[in-house]
Length: 528
Ligand code: G6Q
Image 1 (spheres, rainbow, N blue to C red):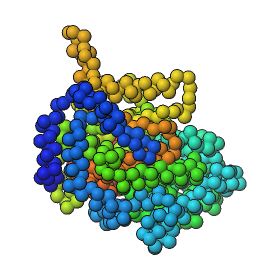
Image 2: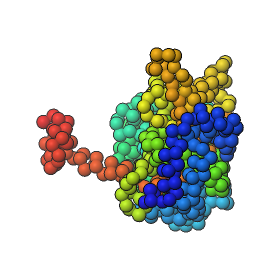
Image 3: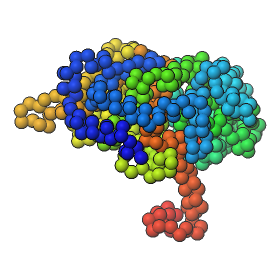
Image 4: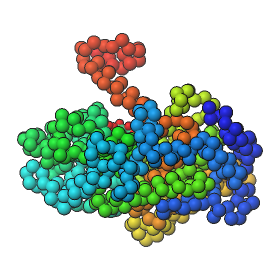
């Protein structure tokens, strides 16, 4: 167990010594701290000086990573070993963004015969056809609306990347994302669109997910109600999937299918064909720039010594609060409106990956915590709501501030005002502010830690680097917690449970021998 390792116990002893040190004192003792505890990679600058760590803390954390075999685990992932042991799969999202010729995937997928760059090339041709109005609908009108139907990993990446890179998107096309099985999602997304000009991308790794299949079926009816000919389907539907048979069964021409592979996990799939909507929006060249940004961070993670490896440092420092200070959450605070869906994306990446309670050896974890709860909102909006708790509440909430030197929409003084807030917030959190006598409610005690991630501007490459930074931070933590970040049995449970209960919603059907709460709810729903 992790807690039995001397390197872990050394951190426990160290925490007892320095846990209550104040950031004010750490900064006062070391005037160069702000510069010294910072690093740069793939266009991202990380300031990690406002953390409750000393040089010794960092040394002990790196020693823990080494002791837990992080180096070997990183190498095993990049080599394509089957590190997703519970599903017996390799984990090779890094191969999706490796430059042409360097991609391991060519050797990994002989049975599909279509390695990464071949799919990217086919996606590029298709994306250009749509972007150039050359992909015509059934009535020969060019496609103007693209609706991505998918959920979880087949939705969050595409929608986040579309919003993040909207600045670079083709403004003549309309993009919508339908995920929820709640019919409202589909109805509102299509209400002002015309089927003749609409293309659906059905994005599903398995092509069996209830929500996606239900929405895809409704999309099919929506198209056929207007175009009245099943031949229209091939002009208005494409599929992104690993499951050719299921795609064909649904009625989508497999010529209009873009494949990927079982070694791409859903939440790590936005660089695969799952990114088709992103590619149509920003164009193949910008999509490849995004992949290059991911790759630059992959290379940094793979090769940099741990003490200057940004994802490793972020992972270790996060673990320091999670496991020793008992911090429950991490707030992700992007100061960029384009990143409004980034916290939601990160929630899946972090919590679906590391929300586990069993070790790789199958033992129940006792004595230490795994994933923190991730949450957040763009600044400055969050400042006018939940920041109160971060500044003055009783909980310790480590924060990640994300900002850019240049705005993509320079407008008067807006950007300076925005960034003044980033710097002011992290400063106030770290150093606090004394209260006027007799007014303790005005006191800010400080010592509240944060990362600040700064980049030049939000480009496709920077977005790629930022996502890869968090992906590898998650990997680092999973390696130390000795869990499998690449399975998701909790998600699969949900997929099965609803199917079991569905037949009992019909009035008059037999009620299952269920618990009294479920039974009462079922009776009420059936109005019996
Ligand atoms: C991601 C999860 C999950 C998955 C969705 C959609 O890592 O496995 O979020 O992406 O359940 O699955 P399909 O792509 O198979 O429809």
